[in-house]
Image 1 (cartoon, rainbow, N blue to C red):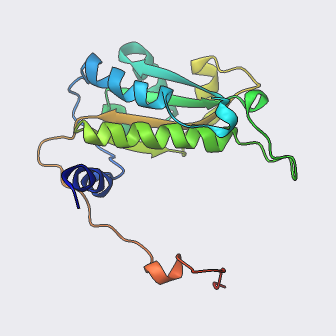
Image 2 (image 1 turned 120 degrees about the vertical axis):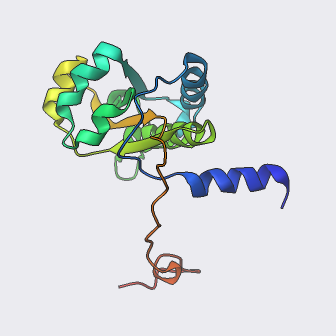
Length: 179
C-alpha cells in the first residue's frame, strides 16, 4: 500500500466513541477544516438537506443539560446535525426520504476529519430530543439526526479494545445468507 492509503486506514482504525474529554479548546482553524469537510460531503442528487449548529462556550453549556452521560459535558464542542426532509431526495419506488442518510454521510466524514486532526468524537443518539430542539431553536420541519461531541482526549486516554461481530456474519457474496 502507499503512504496515503496507510494514513487513511490508520485514521479509520483510530476512530472510536470518546466519552471523556479534556476541556482544552479546539482551535478555530481545526474546527473550520472539519466543518469544510461536512460542507463538501456527498448527498443524494446533491440536495445537501442539512444544517449544522456549532455549540461552544455558553451555547455548549446550555446544551449540556440534554446529555444523559456526564462525560459529554467536558467536550468543548458539540455539533447538532440537522436534516431538512423537505429538501431531500426521495426514492420514487417507495418514497424513502434520504435526508437522514445524507446527514449521516456528512457527519461520518466530519468525524473522520476530526480523528485525522487528533481529536476524539462521539456520535450521540441518546439525548433529550425535545429539550435539544428547544435550546437550539430547531423548527418543526427539521430533525436532529445526532449531536456529536469533539475535543482533545484527556492525558492518558487510550482507545478501548474493539468488539466486533465475526466478519462472516456480516459480509456475504452474491446473496444474503444470514438468518
